[in-house]
Length: 199
Image (cartoon, rainbow, N blue to C red):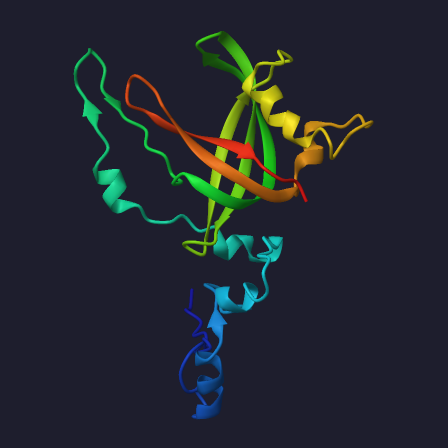
């Protein structure tokens, strides 16, 4: 089988035809990993309100490296099994949020037995760091008014007053939220989200 030579375009720098103007124009643009033009964070951030537009979510929501924090996780060899402490991905503070997706996990082992859970994925934008971070928070499906799920849903009461909805109706909602950290006896740290506003 013969190998076919493929002429590949150069994304930044002079073109193969020695047209230097093409390279200069492209070097002034922000290119994503596929070579497509993207708006810079400062261009998207013009104005007072930051928009978590779906078209930019692939680029903005790349995993952030937390090498130092990951290296500080405590590994325990105290019992017959090995455990590693969970650390929070997101610092405490106020963020702009968008609910990106909601999934269901069935028969999850919890301290209350086997439970089904809604796993709600948020895109959180920090004005301090100007970064978007993704976090998924599980909620046991429960109709108990004191449950974490019911307390979370209470924030949307005014938005949906008089309506009957499914959990999928929350997808794409935006607003402001506060992240708190919950520290358990074993040292694991989890994020808890408090919805402050719904837009």
